[in-house]
Image (cartoon, rainbow, N blue to C red; front, side, top):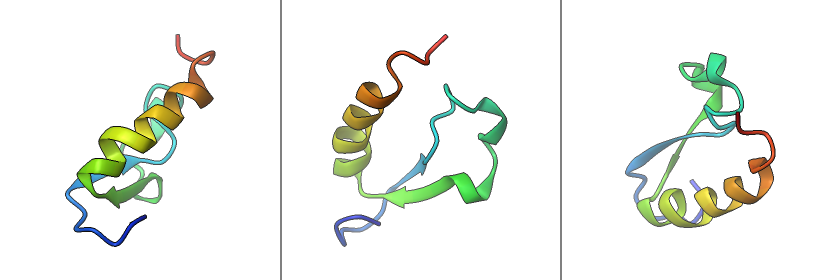
Length: 54
């Protein structure tokens, strides 16, 4: 949880596109509110991992 809002989405900390083998790893999951999962986190991932996608 980042902001204290109700968490409605499950997020992969390390994106599935970077580590598909961790897709079901419970230590790679976090709960986020819709705003942070859809907005801030996705934007950050695009910047961090843009060169790593296959």
